[in-house]
Each structure stands twice: as C-alpha cells, then as structure tokens.
Length: 314
Image 1 (cartoon, one colour):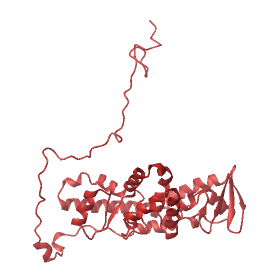
Image 2 (cartoon, helix red, strand yellow; image 1 turned 30 degrees about the vertical axis):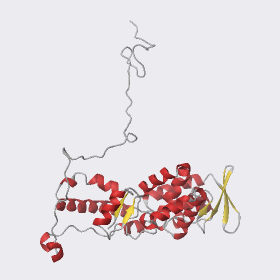
Image 3 (cartoon, rainbow, N blue to C red; image 1 turned 90 degrees about the vertical axis):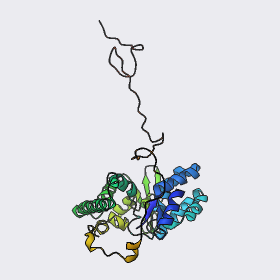
Image 4 (cartoon, one colour; image 1 turned 60 degrees about the vertical axis):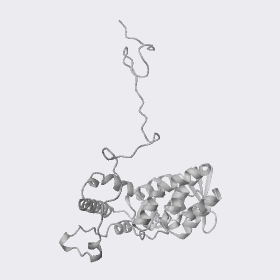
C-alpha cells in the first residue's frame, strides 16, 4: 500500500499522523506543475527530460537524464534530491507495482468510485475489489490476444517509425557508430549503448526512426532494442496476480487489540448545506463557450441584421 498525492502540506501532515508507516509518493503530474512554476525560464526544455527521469528503469538512464537536466538548470537536480527520489522516481521507489504510472491511475480511480463513496465502508471495499478485478481481467485478456512481441501501443509506434526510417540514408562511421542522414540533417546512432543524438532513443526507451534505419540495415529485430517492460510477457506478468473477493465476515481473524479499540466519530462541525460532489474549478479550466450570432435577415452566422450585407431579395 502507498499514498499518492500532490505536495499539499495538509495532506502530508494528515497522512504522517494517521499512516506513519505507509510510504507517501508524489504524482509526477503534480510535481511537474511545481517545477514548471519555479523554473519557468526552462520549463519547455525540462518537460520531456523530467518525465524521462521519473520513468527511467535503470541507473544509467536515470543518471544520464539528471546530467541533461543539470546542463539546462543546475538548481533542478538539487530540488528533486531534496524531495526524495523514492517519492517520485520509478527506479528508486520501494513500492511494488504502484509506481508504474503509465497514466494518472489515482485520478481514474477517483472518477470511477464517485458514486460508491456515499455507501457504507464495506460496500466501498466490495466495489473497489470488483472494479480492480474487471480492470485486471480486461487488461490480461487484451495482452493474451496480442500476437506480437511488443504490446499493441509500442508495436504500432514501431511501425510508424519504420515508415519514417525508409526515407533515411545510413553510413557506418566507426565499428559502433552510424551516421543517419535525414535530408540535410544527420544523427549519430550507437545501438550497443542505445543512444541517438536526437535524444529520443534513450528518452523513450524504444527505437527512434534513426535507430530503426540502422537496425534495418543490420537486419536486426526492433523488439530487441526496446525496453523489456514493453514486451508481451512482461505485460502479462503485470496482470497475472489474481484479485480475490472479500471473504465472509464470519471467517475474519481479528486481533483483540483491534476489537477493543473504540473508533469515535471525528471532532468538528459539519458545514451547513449539501456536501459538494465536485471541486471548485479555476477559470483556466472552465471551457470558454463562445456565443454564436446569426443574422435574422439572411440566417448566416457571424453578423447581425444591422451589419448584414446580403439581405433577402423581395
């Protein structure tokens, strides 16, 4: 178990008091928001590098991206180190399975259990168990139907990159290095180290078009140069652990310490009125609805009757 949230001081103090032994991790989406606010000057250059270092799976990748970040702004690595690598980096995380943040899973769960949160706690637990069972079943079923070496998403991406690689010219530079010409531009590729001068090969951990042009020249398999986390067998392993339903209450083994512990209702006064179901949205998130005007004379949009230039003929 772990807790994933933003760096709000109230959440940090509450979880430290109630769950002192549970790891508290930070959502990389919210963490990037703090970084972009504090280092606005270089936020466009730091965006891809920060997400790459957060999702890095090896020490070599992590150190490489941290060096690239320090070249842009030396303050950012110190800021990330002060937060704690184990709280946001997938490589340094001490939590199993929970840090593979391919999407904002916390927000997805909050959206899915919106109606169940009004029911008693046992109903909420039963609902969450059934929800995770359904997600695991459908994801495992999709992975089992796949007949390719990689997952569906990355197999499609490799196909797109292979199409771009056909337009490129490859010339050996040394025993390990290759020069890939893309029109006037040129990139240096090293397959052994998994590096391309464009930066996409080492950042996304899947071959960029330049690397695929070299792979095609040497008659190698593109899947062998992708991260092993993208392969079909690892996707199946993610969902192989079964999710069991909650057993009957009569079979529970509860310690005497828990049974004797009296849980009282929280202190405080409830606000008057109905409890809010949605948070307040800032003006930046609200959709700006533009009012459409139509002419009452000709029926066309964009002008009114006073400015109409093509009135109907009598």
